[in-house]
Amino acid sequence: MLEVRYNTDTKEITAWCGDEAQFGNLEREGHAVVILNIPIPSQEAGAYLFDEATQALIDNPDYIDPTPPDVIRAREILATSPSVITQPEMWELMRIFGRKLGFN
View (cartoon, rainbow, N blue to C red):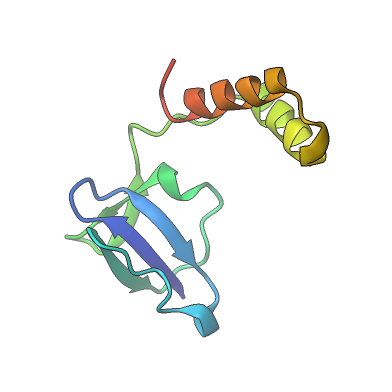
């Protein structure tokens, strides 16, 4: 079972929870929550849209999968203690996440 929160306007999946003991914590204004009888998907939530007609997750055509070098570098920066992350590394991390969100 999977609890899924999606934006009611865009149908983009914004969060999910696979732990039935924690169901009910995903509510947010402007979003709807549904329970689906599926396992937790392998991709990130943003990679999917909710199809209300079929009550299923479908691929999000606007989703941009992060490039592997970006993922590796972001993990390296985030693994560093916050007290030693430099200003240039913070800007680099923001550029990586900007690309992930479609801001090139």
